Structures are given as C-alpha cells and as structure tokens.
Amino acid sequence: MNQHPVSIYRKLGVEPVVNCGSSRSFYGSSVMSDPVREAIVSASLDYVIMEELAEAIGQRLAAITGAEWGTVTAGSSGGLALAAAACVAANDPLRMLRMPQSFHGEQRVVLTPKGQRFAYDQALRLVGASIIEVATMEEFRVALRELHVVAISIFGERDAAAPIRFDDILPVARAAGVPVLVDAASEPLGYPETWTARGADLAVYSIGKLIRGPAAAGLLLGRKDLVRAAWFNGPPHQGFARAMKIGKEEMVGAIAAVEHWFSRDHEAERRSWRRRLEVIRDHLRPINTLRLDLSELVGGVPRLKVDWSQCQPELSFLELRAELLARRPRILIDDYGGSDSSTMLNPFALRDGEEVLVAEALHEAFSAVRPIVSPPPVTEVDVSGEWVAELQFANGPARHRLRLRRQGNEISGAHLAPGSEVDASGTMKGGGFELQAFHMVEGNTVSYRFVAQECSTARIAGFVEMGAAASHTKGPTTYGQFGAVQFHAVPAPEGLSPARG
Image (cartoon, rainbow, N blue to C red; front, side, top):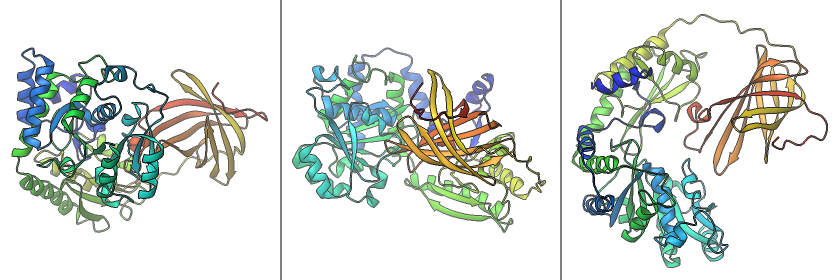
C-alpha cells in the first residue's frame, strides 16, 4: 500500500479510510493508477502552449476512443456545462461572452425524457436554460416545434427504462437540427465510444472513477465542431467557463488514464472484485440472521448487500457507519442503495487485503451484544400550533414556518419555506423532537431535518441539517451534504408571511 499520501493526510489531521463505499466524489473519487501519476509528474516539469496541447489531446482521444474529437474537462459536470455552452453559443464570441443572458429574448430549453433528471443537471442550467421533461414522442415533437430547444439530454444508464428512448429521439432530433448530449459519467468507456457510435452528438464521461484518472477530470467526446467549441468556451480562455479551470497536469493525466483503461484486463478486475466480496460474504455467513445478496452495477462492478435487520434490529445505518469510522483502520460504508438497516458493499476501491479488515469489522459489529439503553424521558411540552422559525444562514436569517400537531410522541404538519410548502413528520425525542420535510427543486429532493434541542410553549431551538439528492442518490450522505444551521422558533402571530427576513 502506498504510504506517501497517507502521511500527507495525517499531517493535516485527516485519517484516511478503507473504502468499501465506491468511488464517489464524497470519498475522493478513486486512487490514480501508476501511469497516471507518472504522467502528471512529467507534465508538471515543463511549460506548454495550451492550444497546442488541446489540439494534440483532441487527436489522441479521437484515435483511442473512436469519437470524432475529445477534450478534457473539469470533471464530468464541467463537461456537461461546456457541452451545453457549445450547443447554445458555439464559438461565437458575441454569444459566448453574454451567457447565461438571453441573446434575443429567447427562453432556452433542454429536453429530457421523463424520469431522467439527475443530480448534476444543474450544469446544463448554467447556460441559462430550463430543463423540461417529456413523457411521449408527441410531447417531444410539440416541444421541438414550439420551444427554443438548444439540446436533448439523455441520462445514459436510465435509457433502457425511459418512456422515450435514445433510438426514438435521435432521428427526430436530427431532423430538427438539435444536438443530443448523453451523460455517461458512470458508465465504462468502450471502443468505439458507445453513444457517439450510435449517433449522439456529444457524450460525457468521468475520468476520476472507473478509469482511475485525476479526480477532477472528465471527458467530453463527440462531434469535432461542437467539442472544439466547448474547448473555446472553457479555460484557459476568458469566457463562460473560466471558473471551470483544468490544468495541463490533469489533461495529460486524463489521457494516460484512458490509454491505461484500454490496456487493462477488465475481466480479471471483475473476478478480483467478486473474490473480495466473497471473502466478506463467507466471513459473515456464520451469522445466519444476516441477509447477504450479490448483485452487479453498470460497468461490471459487483456489490454485496448486507441486511442486518434481523440480527441487530436496533442498529441503524448511521450508528453502524459511525462505529466503523471510529475504528483503526477506519472502515467506510456507503448509503447508496441501502436502507436504515442495510448497506451495499462495493469492492472497487478496496486494496488487496482490505476485504479481510472489512469482514472482521462487520463480523464484530454484528456479533456484538449491545446493552439496552433506555431513551431519555420525552418532554411533555405540546408543540402543536404554528411557529415562525428563523434559520441562520451565512448571508443572514431566513424566515420559515412550522405548522405542527403532536399526537402522543408523533408529530405531523407542514414546513413552509419561501416559495414552497410541504408535509412534515417526526418524533418527540428527549427534551425536543426531530422533524423531516422534503421539498422538490429542479428534479432534486431537498431535505430539511429539524432537530429541536430546546422545547417550550414559548420557544423552540436547535439545528437544521440540510441536503439534496436526485432519485438515484438518496441517502444520509446527500441529505446532509449542505451542513447544518442553527434555528429558533416562536409562536406565529396571525397573518405573518413566511417570506425571507
């Protein structure tokens, strides 16, 4: 195991983890392969004219992926933003420098099949476009006729289950002259590149995940004119995406990663991943109340679902996660695809031998005799009524409302935020309560978890944990990703608006 980066992290006071939670950005993406590290070091030793480097990279990516052209972007999300910029402004500087403003009063629209909104489509909205879902080919044709459609966005891994699919959309989009962009960030890169070979104009991939390249790098592949236009909209140029800067080191490292990707024995890797999960599964099998199920992700990565609801019914996912992170070495489990009493183990990020550490840690956790802890007595305060809550954001307080009804130890009601009102529910706990509310914003579920630590008939105070997730990324990690702010609430006078104040 390479100790150099570990010592760097520890010098900063950060303890690394044994990662069986996959190559998510939350966990630092993946560990770069040796050829990538060597390429990055080599690139850091010299100066280069970036236009010449981009031209060489475009040619090289065309040769090794089979696409017309390619460019390296600041992650796959940066690739989406640059692709959208190319579709809107191309390489016309009068348009490039005005984005995201409207050029002639037009209302830009990106169309996507219903159910394909995803966590990173905000990158498409950066160019001033709205995203509209269409459920039928008739809706799609009407939208193309009546709206200013700048692109069609396809979420590649969901295409097979979409109400209208890529193959249905492509000929109609081509006839209308509207580019088709595919987000394939989580998919394995094939030769020839899958989506452009099928007719897509543009496709985006992550470099820092399966391909084991620089964590902050992505690939934009496709039509040469559009990919080159995307490059001109991005760094080092002084235009729309200058903020999405990527350096010569990441660009060269990304090429090395793609070259190494096509030389790797993927079948051997898949066998190795499966063996690691089988070691964990076999170590846990003697605990016969555990449910252990193997499945497979896109890209051939297997997963082991571990369900402990029968053997440790009182143990929550968050409690188990905290226990494993408190160990040395620290073990990280993930919440994607799991539940409050289950998790999906992903072997992609495990080094040789680490599967044994994971197996032993889980066996110890699931075999432990846990003392029965009596919860603290619940407050008798009746919080029923309407409350004005102030949330202390960095730019000042925001006024929300909580409409609550207590029945026993259960709470129901509503959370009224500026521009949004949703149902809320929760439980009285100790001297306060926990209340959960979910709002919808641009295809994302936005979570507010109110934790009241002080509770009386005149005042409620505590903190609010916040986050957001698309339908495929829901879990404690994403639902807490925006951190927490303090809040306090007082009974609402009649007629008070929940507007920001």
